[in-house]
Length: 481
Image (cartoon, rainbow, N blue to C red):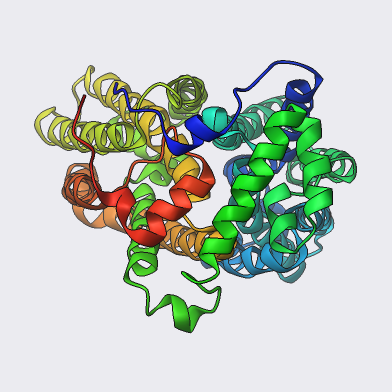
């Protein structure tokens, strides 16, 4: 835990106050994070749906890989393309569009007569998932006061893991109660349409990002919106702060890619964003989320026991996300991320060592590995997942925020798809122990990269972060008081 001197934002802005405006901010965050819930449900639901879907549609093994990865490929494209859309058309309109994509994608999957329509539906869902993973954190970061930006933006990651757990629970209930029904997988996939409707209706009543409005010259609208989620005095001060920053930024950075590539500080922050996104996936977290039951069978559990045991990582993920939100405003981002990669590396080494040293027929082997896997997932969710998404939503300057977020998340989804494809092959080729030793080596590198390059953003307004990023001042580590 670290203290810091009062920032420029703290000196210039009136303090936060409680009132109807703070409740309104909570409502906006709740509605927007339905996008995170949909993200989580759609990435988790395939676990339970794939077997009955394969039986009914007569899918081959290669088709299963295509069905699973088509969403991830769509997500990579969506992260990049829909990030640009959010810059051009606004955050609110873009999230409304994403809600429609979630709805029509889930319906297409649910009514698919064969593989072709099913893949189209999965790609539509992927576009929505990728777009939501880019735009919702940016929307939340731009609406949040800097004092609580970490915990407010972090709610989206918490909703993602809640969505994944909800998918596991819905699949378990439907599979056990109506498992003999021919079309049960269609119901599993159709459930996603319900929160999509709530997201669309809810966003109709939500405001646009004030920071985006100011970039478009719509200052009066921006102030009117800020005044509904801040005290009037604070709203006026924030508008002045945003305007000052944008005026200075016009000479420092341009939204065109060619000019960005000439600015060493913009290149550096893009590198930091990509490193955060890529290393998050190279922890191997989705090897557990997609193939958890297979890993647990490799550990020594029987098939049915593995399905039940697989719920434990889902539960610890939600608990870890709650703890992470609590920590966001109390512990520096750098400290959190470096601690997270260090713990993940240790757990990977322990998983690999246990898989190597414990005999396959040892009664204790599956339980030791389950505890270590739960420890890995808990470390990931507590220290890395929320912090990664919060950092990605706040480190990029306003004029390239959605592009920077979109590019980083495009890399994230691309690596996600690669890990999802390679992991079962690696597991079969080199075994559980060597696979996790490989993850340990990669995450040891991540620790070094974060120590060297990751800037600190806690306690700074987005405008202050922006000035620090574009001048390079944010990379100067202040001496401890």
